[in-house]
Amino acid sequence: MTTQGNNLDRWYNHYADRTAGLSASEVRALFAVASRPEVVSLAGGMPFVSALPRELVSGAMDRVMRDDGPRALQYGSGQGVPALREHILEVMALEGIRGSVDDVVVTTGSQHALELITKLFINPGDVVLAEGPSYVTALTVFKSFQAQVEHVAMDEHGLVPQALREHIVRLKADGKTIKFLYTVPTFSNPAGVTLTWERRLEILEIARSNDILVLEDNPYGLLYFDGPAPHAMRSVEEDGVVYLGTFSKTLAPGFRLGWALAPHAIREKLILANEAAVLSPSSFTQLIVSEYLSSSDWQGQIGVFRGIYRERRNAMLAALTDYLPDLRWTIPNGGFYVWVTLPPHVDAKSMLPRAVKELVAYTPGTAFYADGNGRNNMRLSFCYPTPEFIREGIRRLSTVINGELELLNTFSQTGPLDTTHIHQGTSSPAATLG
Image 1: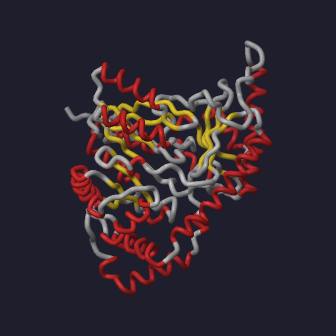
Image 2: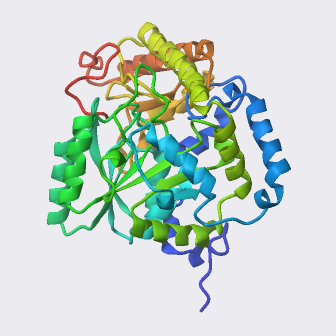
Image 3: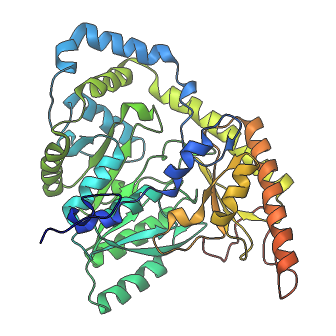
């Protein structure tokens, strides 16, 4: 007897089991609304690419096509163009990383590298340890390979080592297989916090003693505001860390270029997985970016981005203090994001349609958890709107939040909602994020 699908999809019952983990993220679902010009979007983490002088890119493109056009338009290596891999070593050296050009694998964005590593390591039911909250699309990738995601608590200093120990002990007692720890330790997405150097060393020791690979995702490390972040975890641990980098935040996401720096044996499998997936990353974009890094003051351009994002971070923090002084939020020293904690009775996801009606968008906290947590949290992104639009967006958001609180108080059966635990304008020193 032939298995039938449903009335919407003839092939519904033919799909592999792992496709049950494929779903649109809450961030992606927002784009159609947030891209409307009348909406102030504090939702998406889009770099402000307009600050990149067009002549830098067009000049690099012209020189590549003039001097190396046939190679740029041809298939390339599954590992990536050697010249670009040399430049990648220069980029990573700014965060204390030493490596060999042979151990760098160029991918179609760091998201692709994350997917390849997950494909190489995860069997259905294997455990991925991840910060809570964690990067939304990483969670989508893990779920698509049928991994069990276990969130480890964070506070204003990043991942909590003792919480990591407790998770490992519990999971091993339950007979679970832990494949790796996924972390965005520097200016994290979505929380905006940075793992301290002392904790980096402690977490690496925990991972080493438990034979757990660390997957260090670092899109924002060079986008600091008041001073460089601690060196990358990969700078002190080579065999136990796979480092993921990208040009999406420090150059432009349209090039779709990222990379992985991996121990030798993992690197060999990464190259094979890369070839199986895309044959080779784009020679065209690799050579353009390599030429850009050779001929321009790319570090100076990153400094320009830092100044823009610092100004916008400051505008968001000032607006939050002025319009929503009773809430709690993180204070990032780099990156793109502020993590806001609402009163416990407020559901940010259910409130979002009312926010869109007031022409402001944000990302609900539930997008950054695999277990349904984060309902009274929201991620606010300051990277793309101008300072003026950021302030207007926070003003509109305050109207929505205050209206929500009034409504909940009106219909509460137990009296006014208790918000006395909320600290003005800072993250609570004792509390974990969430």
